[in-house]
Length: 361
Length: 260
Image 1 (tube, rainbow over the protein chains, first blue to last red):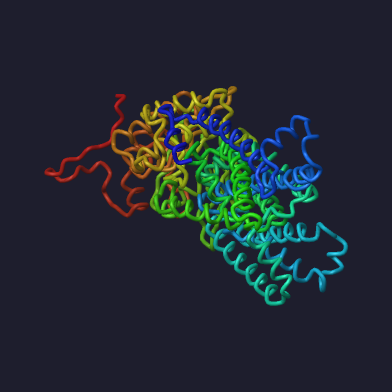
Image 2: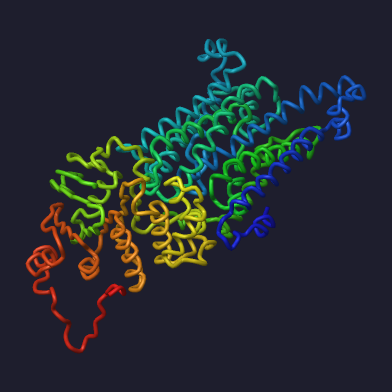
């Protein structure tokens, strides 16, 4: 990625359209490779050659067990990784544009912790206070709780930080931190109340994992991610203009408050639904857009689709590592993304390759 | 014609604008002057649609501003704000192109290039905005505004250029250049409204001067009627300053247009 950034300095024309298209094509290729890796590696012996045989309709060469591994384990897991990675990276990119801050992230303004505390509450209270709700919703109980938790925090944040129809960036970030702390407190309370089995669930879940992926889970987050991806072309110009400030965006014909509402709901949907199915996986939403800005510039026309492709690819690769590095045991994917993401993030911060908080308007 | 009547804006019990009326006619360069806190920027925000007045009425060619969609307003007027800082490294060309895209240009990149050339920034297209000097950033923003209203008249309707302290952080030569571009825009049939602090520049370029003080218009008209000792003394608290030369041993340079 670093070499990529050097290779793609802005052309002397100052127009980075071609560069953006080129990087998108490259990312699409990387994503296809990442999908193949995710489908083809794992503790069992199903490899790329078996995958090829399966794909070319030569499935007879695979044992029944190998077919089950491909169809019921790796395929849903890859699809889930794709959607979760895309959702995390796009929600990060949108939030950074909305707040005009390259370090803003759903994790920072408390959307993730809102979804997280609701999910933990679901785990702990699922067979006592919330048992009737859990019975009613069945398998969808945890995902829906997490989604509404994220939505609730985003909505609270919006009410608190919006005055006279305007959202102040500073107030939004500060109240986001406070709301995140409140969610963390609720989570702590739940953890105290939890028994040993629930604690293990919570720990595994809080580190994030694509384990236990089913097509049911894939289908449960597909509508959320699909909607977020579909609105990307309609918010890209507005987010670009918003970088110049609320007033300048309005002067350039952007309905600023409507844009902000749409983006906030989209971020809550993408973030809440991914937290629901995969736990809190950190750093994808901040590292992917950061690296892409170095490679293609900050314009959301290319940054948003690039984040979708790059986020999917990064998560699939991280998941492949998580499955194989300590096989047959499996590392939580959040550990891998943090191990990779935190140093990259710190490096960006210290090296000022991007833009630091100091340069904020 | 863009006009405002009976505009009043109050914030925290203080009247920023008190029953102000303003008429912006095509072909005219209108300049607002006045001391700090007089309400100049507030008036511009109200007229550009950015701020809703508590009372009063703004109309663009007879249509109330409240009925205009942001995209519609964007095709009729462009605004140059005071200093803008960015946290993301857009290039100068990308910034200027945003203005061209806002008015629906068919070839926004080419439009942006022309606008940059017009403000003397040919060759600066690929420079990241945060790496430019304050004056260069200001001119990139001016290019963005020009790219948004490339012709002073579109579909028979004059367009407007609103400039909030366009000469701030510019050197003498560029101050003149920016105001000359604005004057050309007005003389080609467009509407120009600018806030200026330099009274010499205001007197040189304005067809119509509006003197604001404490949220009220205290004088209005051609510069000969408005820049006089009585008004300058009452508004700025400096008596007998109009037309007085500095002491003989102090050299002075007045900003003056090159076109005369």
